[in-house]
Image (cartoon, rainbow, N blue to C red):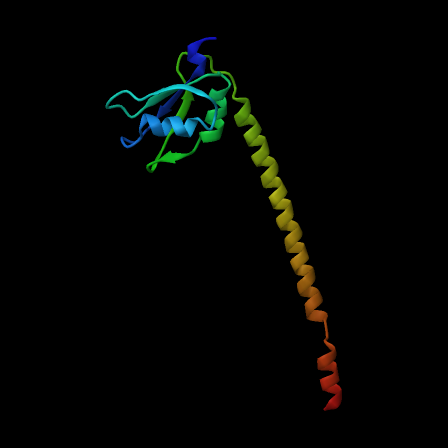
Length: 134
């Protein structure tokens, strides 16, 4: 197995980010071998035990910020750039979820209109009884 396929580049890191912090964060995506942040640099490298953890961590951790700075994640340069199946699945899920919530909102709007219409035409017994007594 090529080492380059198991390495994740993490860029735009705050000077407050430590190797221990990156270790704990990326451990959520898979077992790790090492984490290295070169001294005085705003990037680091995370080495996973399995190559499949790299695209998974990009999909899982993409868009997060550490100490107010959005981190940039990518497979290490020099490794083959194959399409990320996890990102594709995430996009499909988000698309189906947004379509589903749109349809649910339509149904709720329709239900609310129906209820409003019904409540306006409703005449309570108390008001009709009151009208008869006068």
